[in-house]
Image (cartoon, rainbow, N blue to C red):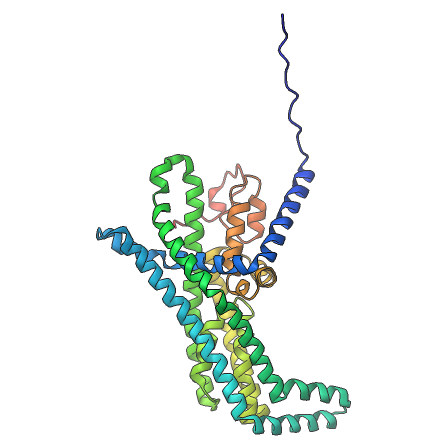
Length: 368
């Protein structure tokens, strides 16, 4: 009689070993994303644009229009958003370069007065030479040129973005049927995806709303002070508001330089003061509350995400940092039963510890 052979039990990995394996796998994935940034960056941008524009499909579907009309509307709206943002950045960059060239004599005179003040204050020649090199018109023009080359590099990736948008918009129409096809079996996964998509849309709606308010205030203040091209810098303030935390600094540099050119130190300090007050009141005190309600991310994590994703995928990472962070949290933590405390640390107030007897201790998950 042959005795049945019992297979040995599968080895059980310790929690520490599982953590190390997870960190190693994450490092490998991030390294792959870093080396494939030229493909991953446009892909992430296309995904975010399709997610933002997807709601334009719903009115057409409710009216019984063919599916291709909804897909076409998503593609057209995504293209319009992409072209509009690119055109605004191009306008701001070209206007800044032109104005710096037009006011080069005034800028040079103000630089010389600054150098005289530095020498009178007892600074050595090296500090004065460093200040002169930073504020030299040639240096500023070269800086604009380097920014232009960066924008041009982004523009070369637009071909892939346009193609990705077409394919993803077409696939999105099919993915909307996943709930009917798979039923309750995949309901939790589909719920997390819907929650992620709605969070991304809410985030950009909040950013666009506050960006418009900031742009109007900054533009009126610059016009009142007499800074050249105030409308252009108001538009730049709106666009840079989509870069969390540091976007305000990017939008401040061109009007601050021109204020120094046409009005010297008093106008420069006035522009910096106005931008700082507007930034502190709206973007530091008010906007984070609305952003936190929209995406449930801590301020520390949102700030770090800008630096991290910019390093990983380049300039697009600054704009896409919040959606990418939300995607990683959804992918890694929201499906993990033991990841509640990590979700809570990330700012997710809907994370409920297992077995919590008091549902009122946390805020209920919003409907997408």
